[in-house]
Structures are given as structure tokens and as C-alpha cells.
Image 1 (cartoon, rainbow, N blue to C red):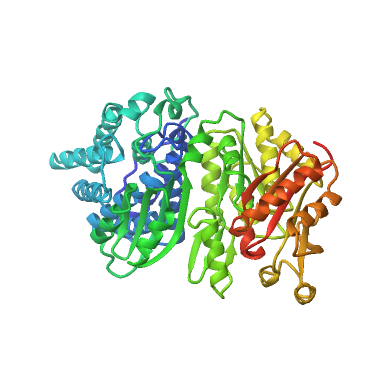
Image 2 (image 1 turned 60 degrees about the horizontal axis):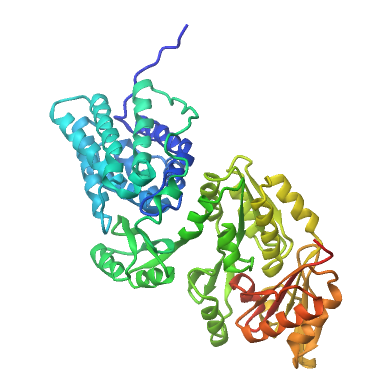
Length: 597
């Protein structure tokens, strides 16, 4: 006997909530497919993750707050979408929901004419949010859906019938997207954002048709394999996908749009209300966007994804992806070669927060540290930053290994743990019990294992085998910063000042730093190298880092090569804010792999 299925409606708030939930679940289940066909405007493989993240924020917003009727529910959905929007398509969808909410007004129940009016306003506002709208994208599919709804409502169709017919029009518009955009035609796929919008509608249609969620079956999708590689470089050459929220009273949208256009970026989208705008833009220098927006209101929720790195990672045919936080210092060339994902920590200077190694150069950080009496502060990335990168990479790799900064030094590792719990057991975490160059060497070891075809278990086994052999040492010019940050005990500060010594630090096995010695300032790099050489036998690889002290880093690298009998001079890297904010300008760091291997 079959259970009776009662046809559904989305007229009221409660049923509309369930219908949206069905659509959101469908988009989430199709996330990896959408990531794999994402080739426009940039083939960085994250549209599905962006839409899922955006709609996940909507779902959580609707669960946390009660709303009266359809109007109240759409207002909550729009507000949550603006706060949680990610990526080009996510920002466009957020503005669509804002427009639809305004179109519904205060109505408690939807009718076909009211829904048609709301969707039409949503389509108009979504297009207006984009600085350079293109046909063949999510905008075209939204427009086709809106036009069909208007026609169906004008003919007197009921809400369910009108929605079904408009969905057919959206599907047809989606099928035309490869003819409208060359990148899609080359890759043999439809537009990922447009597909995501249709998936949202399909989930709602499932609810309308059957009154329950129809499970999305696993399937192979024709045309997705190799789509990113076939697409080429896309239409946008900028490196970062930059986002933030700007808040204020009566934000002048047109003035903001003009100001941001002058930055010569791409894919500019402004989504939201006069009091709160989500800003999305592709740019090479993220801080230029944040600084420009600071003139209009309070800037928050900064994010900058490296699209070049994402594109490379999406095209890397390894089973396992490798991720680090920005406390790991390793050469940019190695990050790019292995497609290592990097989640930036936050660094605060004065009243402003910056993304480590992204929104502020290391040179600028140390210049400000020398000039400002107020010390910088660092904070861990929110779990959402990890989760977004994890999900993007898991769309292109079976598993992921995160090589993190010592849990004893930062809450960053705990943020990654929180994000990993939402990824179905496919994310594996390794506490490096160190930072900077030592953490970077662990990451390189993991990436090299992955490049050889190792699975996550084998990568983790190799990392554990190296534990104790990867060591990190530092020479600090002044202990003020480390003492203020609680990394070094206060008693060491007057002692080193009185004796005019340069303190030497070492990462302990428990992940904490310890005061391990000192050297006089004269010939400090060479003395530091000799000190390291006495403690690290059989070194096979070394990495040298510096906090705005390139000249001494070069002397240190040369001395290490000679004393450790290395085949090559160790690579030299700039140490970022995650470490530099506490160690201070002039600091030198050495990471080594000792005891063979």
C-alpha cells in the first residue's frame, strides 16, 4: 500500500519555509557537480560551494528566527543571504532575494500574480547589482523564469501551475547558456551559477509536486570531466575573489559602485540594502577594496580567495588536497606547484583588521610595527573560512589533509576542527606542533606524498614519521613582542636586555616555544647557524625565514649550507604576521628536517 501524498503549496510562510529548505538541500547535494562545471567568469571551481554556503546561511537564518507569513520569511531569507553570500553567484542570489522580499511587501500569503511581481523585482535588482551583466549566466535564467511567471499569472494560472511552467522556461534558458558564453562552449558545460539557480527551483518544484523532499540520486554528469582545464583562463585575470560587508546609514549604492569601478577590477556585485551591502569583486590587491569602502561605512567579514591557487588545485589530479593556515611559511613557488590551499589568519593594527599575506604585505606590516607604539594582534580565522576552502577542494579531490599551526600556540587548529566536522570524514587534520618554517616543511612533505598518489592515511603516516625530525628555531632581536603575546615568559626580557643578547627559541615537542639560548648581536646569523648545526644532525632539508631582514637571512642560509653540508642553499621566505606580529622585525627562523629522510 502506498502512502497518500498531499499536494503542497508555497502560499503561506510555513509551507514556503519547507519549500525553500527542499531547494536548498538540492543545491547542497549538487554542490560538487556545480564546482566541477564552474568555468565562468573564472574557472576556479567554487560556484557550487559558494551557492551552498550562501543558501546554508539562509537555512540557518530561517531556523534561528521566527517569521510571520510569506513576507516575514522572505525578509529573513534576504537578510541571511546578504550576511552569508559568497562568490559572484551567491551575491547575485542574495540581491534577487532582497528584490523578491521587497516585491512581496507585507503579504502573508503568495498568489501567482504576487509571486510573479516579486520575482520580476528580484530579477531587476539582481541585474542592477552587477556592474557588467552578461547573458548566459544566472541573470539570464532568472530573467527567463521571471518572464514566464508573468505570462502564466496574466493567463490566470494557479500558483503551482505557473511555477511549473516558469521552471520549464528556466531550464530552456539554462540549456542556451553554452551558446551565449564562449568559455562554456569550449568546456562543454552550462553555466554553473545558472545551473545552481535551476537546482534551487527544482527542489522547490519537488516540494510543490509531492509535498516532501525527493532524494537527489547520485549520478554522473556528462561534460563535467576536465571542464575547468578546457575552459582556459576565463574572462577575468585578477588573482583574488574579494568580499566584505559594508554597513552604514543610507549607503549611497551608486557612489560606491562608481568608486569601486575605478579600482579596475572585475565581476563587481553589490548586493543588499541601504543599510548593509555585501560587496564582491575580483581584484589583485584586496586591501584597495576594503580601504575604498571604509569611506562609506564600517567594513567587516573580509574574505579574499586566491582564484589562481583554486584553479590550479582544481586541475591537480591528486587524490588528496593539502591545506595550511598562513602561519606556515613556505615558498610561493611550492604553494603554486603543489596547489596547497592557504587559509589566512587575521592581523589587527589599530582599529583595522587585515588578512595575513593577502590584504597587507609583510613589508608593510613590519614598517607599521616599527612606527606604531601599539602592538599588532592576531586572531584565528573563523571556521567558515576553513569550511569554504575544504568544500571547494573536496569537489575536486577525494580527501584533504590540513597541516595546522600548533594547537598550543593558536586557536586556529580548533577552528579547522570545527569546519572539518561538517565535511563527512573526508578532512584529516595534523597538528604540526610548530609554526612558520617547520610547519611549512611538514606541508611540503604532505604535498610531495600526495603528488606521488598517496591517500590521506599514507600522508598522515609520513607526517607522523617525521614528527620529532622536523624542528623549528628562531633568533629574536627583541623579546618585547613575544612577551606581550604570552609566547615567552616575562622574566627573560630584562635578562636579555641587560646582557645585550639575541634570544634563541625552539619549538618544544608539546607545541610551545621555549627559551633555548642566546647569542651576541655581532655576526648573529653565522652564530645562529652554528648553534642550529650543533642541535640538528643529518639535516636533509632546511628552510630560512625572516621578518623584514632579507640580508641577514641570506647570510644565514649560506652559513647553513656550509655547516650542514647541504646540496643546495636553503630557500628563503618572508615570515608572515601570524608569527611576525609576536616575534617582531628582524627575527630569523630556521626549519630543518633532521636525522635523514
